Length: 425
Image 1: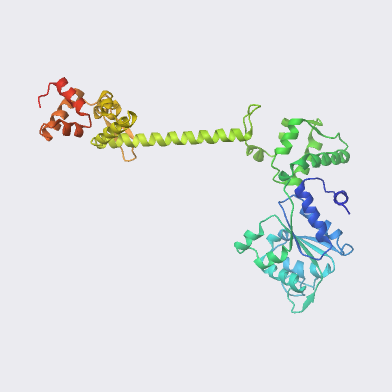
Image 2: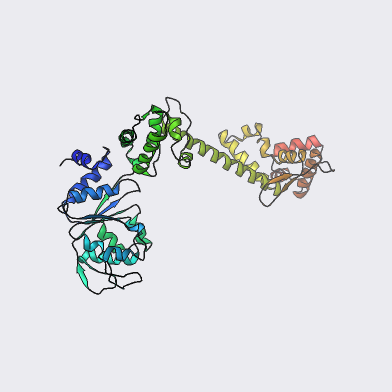
């Protein structure tokens, strides 16, 4: 039997590669008695795969039963699966056969196997390994010939790491794993499924077949479908029953989609026709890097300014750096540097001017500089500069070179200042 015939027989709609691969695995394993673990999100149609495996197996004329492990209370699941003896627990007024006994020779589909209690997992492991089980309240070992197909929407391997699922049972169940893809991973099938559903509902409810415009189709395809095929079928039924007009626009479709999911969808600006998604991603990365570098530069400048205010002697090092930079720029010719003194921003006088002409800064522990109102005393920068030059000359006993170095200025600048302020050294 070819794949398309199987799809037609079991109502499987879609042509995505992931879906076709899962179906091929199911067909190949059906002829064996191997245990199968079907993995997939809720609503993808895992139970349909269990029916396919059973119908194509040698057990197809024997019983098939689907058991939802998450829907049976923990206190009664052992009795449901393996049976119990009369009086084995409160309410056990008579003996009862379990599913493994009544379905012997057939197939049991254990849905949501991840919800099974740890104690029941141990009983199931024994059935899978030896084909033996014991009724609750009995000591008699019984035999069964049942094929087990399990399904889960959880990551059972992670559950084994958290001691919520037996590791030995996990490996025993996953002899042949089948992964059913989520609907958002088979977008090419969404419109096919929707068309099938609305056609069926139109026939059932005697209404016109719903038609989507192009924008509505794009919205349907790009919606994440957390409930998968089950959710798509529900939406199709709602639209078929509740929509007054069979012609559905994107705005009409949004009314039927859950608001919480719609609010989580990204809102993207319409890009230019010539732009691609990768180009926008690259531009965004460049802008992020630019903003980060700018922030880093501002922080460094802020720290440098604070250090200069706290320790004026640091300006001498800044002056030396400026001299070295200029020497490098003019290929090491000091005469050229003499005609191009260091920039004003590197000289202490300029810093003093900036501070003196502004209100007095106060530096807090977080590094922020806050301004106070003007104080009554006004500082004259020329008087302060003259006072600093005199102190430097006295400190170095009239040696202009040493005084200039201490002040962070060139000897030529110091000579000019001496004349300007009429200082006799």
